[in-house]
Length: 435
Image 1 (cartoon, rainbow, N blue to C red):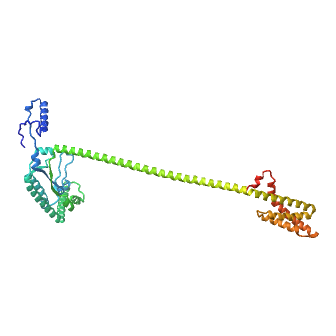
Image 2: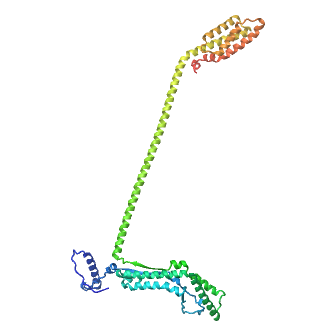
Image 3: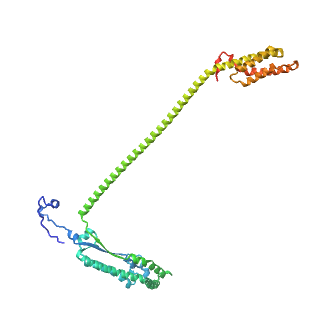
């Protein structure tokens, strides 16, 4: 890149690049102040990567997995006994695990791909310093097609060599194991010649180590990869723009999250309000139903009270209507009680029923039939028996037996009428008129 000094042009204030000019002038002024020089003595060095950015691309050839083809050997496996207690470093040698006729065709495409990259690319120490790696080289667009063709040819050669190894994999294993078995046998002889103690299974150990390090079919198929990576320059202004865009995007996401959170809060408030309204409506309905039930109970109680009052009034009215009749019936029973008592006393005194008393008994029975408006059947039957006994003529011999019967009937009449007669004789006559 050309690093010639270019005089800095003076731009008017209205120039589109006036801001950039002011920034550069501020850097020059700062450098002049620190170094104590005049502004005219400060050189403006142009630095422009637009050519690298617009006219080409950075490419890196990456080969991975080819370390499977080599293995570091142990000195003992080669029959070498190193001296002890020495400060000299002995680096163990490496050997290829595949025969050279198979190993070299696998490694040659890698070197050809790197050679193609070096042929069609340019190296810039500045970009290597900025990228902190010399792997990426700049390939102009006019040479990219040729580089891609050469790289594709190297990749095809790698695939062909790998397929050849996979086809002859069994023979390769046998050949490599036979070779290492001979090397292990020679190493055992050399160790025994030096007086070292050699295990009996020394050869088998070496063979097992080789088998454990030998690449499998799957490793050869998947891990041997050859590719190229493409990179572009990411300028500081673009990074700043990306940072600003990320900050703006972050701010927009935070605003969207805040709006979403506010919407969720609003929705939660609406749901809580609706739930409270539902609870209030349910409580109002419950209170209304309770009030209606209480009102129905109160109405039923009032109706029951009115019905009871009506019954009481009807009972009082009926009591007022029946009281004279009941009083007459009670007086009738009292008269009968007194007459029966008198006949009973006469019967006890004379031991027979006199004619006047018998006549009075017959009249009493007839008078009761006329006044029996309450249909007192039991008393009617007793008076009927008394009338029959008072009417029936009897001899002297049968009179005493008849008097006994009359006395029993009079006792029944007196006992039946005693309660009403006693109640009517009390000073409070209203107690006899209750139901």
